[in-house]
Amino acid sequence: MVLILFVMTLSVGSAAQKVEVGYDKGTDFLKFKTYSWAEPGTPPTRPLLYKRILDSVDHQLERKGLTYVETNSDLVLVPAGGMEFGINVAAAAPIIPSYSGIPPAVNASMWTGAVGYSNLMAPYVPQGTLALTFVDRGNNKVVWSGTVREKLDVEKKDESLQRVDKAIAKLLMRFPPQKK
Image (cartoon, rainbow, N blue to C red; front, side, top):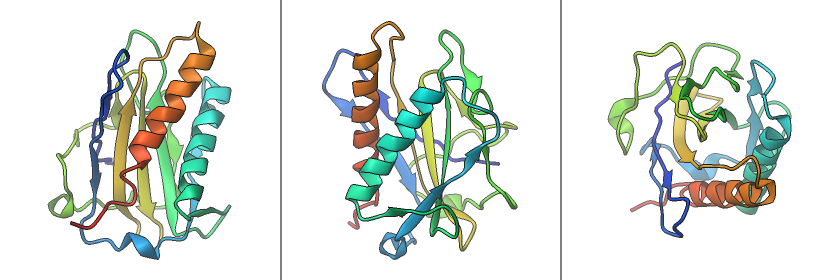
């Protein structure tokens, strides 16, 4: 599956955070009312952190009026990420989403932002990165994608969990995109 990835860089020692996302400019985001999660193809290596990330995204989307449903949702959210320390890995390890059906289409001419790597078997996601892709289930088309990168310290779990929540909140402040 080809994912368009955009980078949001978080400076660990700074409050200033830069967010970059990409989206299909022709999509009416107001039509989306429900969402579901794509199941990971392999069990996450850090299941509690994975659950915390999903819960944080759920909370942010609920505040925006979207409702989680098990099936027949308007949007399918595809998370990908790597928490391995010291190495960069493809999104296939430890979280690879299983999205049934043909891979969703991406129309690069309708996106804002830059196009990511398209020649890789799995989307390349650097260490400490969460890539979140929203797929319009009805059209099987990627409509929004964002990436957040955060350095987490396994020794400082509470602080790291707070950073995860803040990073996800910053990322989803740009969803849905505002019409200009």
